[in-house]
Structures are given as C-alpha cells and as structure tokens.
Length: 107
Image (cartoon, rainbow, N blue to C red; front, side, top):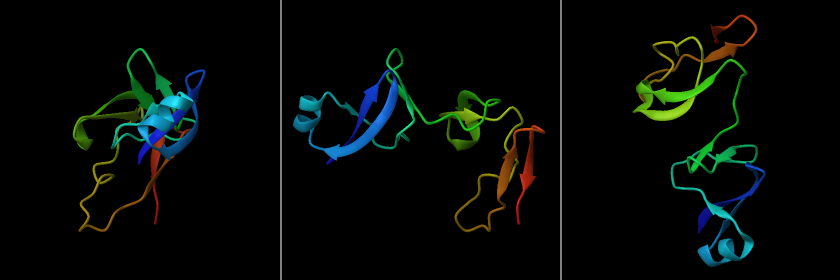
C-alpha cells in the first residue's frame, strides 16, 4: 500500500497507508516514494510539492548540492563539511543554534 496525505488548508493533518481506490474515496493525495512528508508538512499545490516542517525561522527552501541536488530546508550558514557522512565513517553530530546562527558540534 502507498502513503497518502489528508490535506486541510495546505497542511498535512494525517498520513495513511491505503489503496488508491480508498484514497480517491477519501480525497487523499499520494505521497511519492522517497518524499519526506508527515503531519505538519505543507503541500504546495501550485508546485505539486510536499515540504517538511520548517526547522528554524532563518532557514530557506532550496537545493542542497551536497545531497544530490535534492530540495530541502537550508540553513543560512552552510552545513559543516562533515555533516553528511558515509555509512562507514563515524559521524560528527551537530545542532543548529538559531539564536547565534551557528552550528554546534556535539559529542
């Protein structure tokens, strides 16, 4: 079964797994495979695009060249060079400090 979104006033209020015929009866919208969409996400009908919840006020929607050209929320300061890692590497964790507009390395 595919994932479908119940959208009210442009916001995803529920995500369900069902058949296409069930979704059509309920007026649900298909969430394409690989698309990050959940409760609180926004659906832009003019772009036919789901966007996850904006993580911070200072971030903007754009294309992340580091992540294969995928659209996502981008911070005003670029991601640290080791933010995205290979599965074989030991990752460095970071948190965004919205107040000071900077990345904070975790342990």
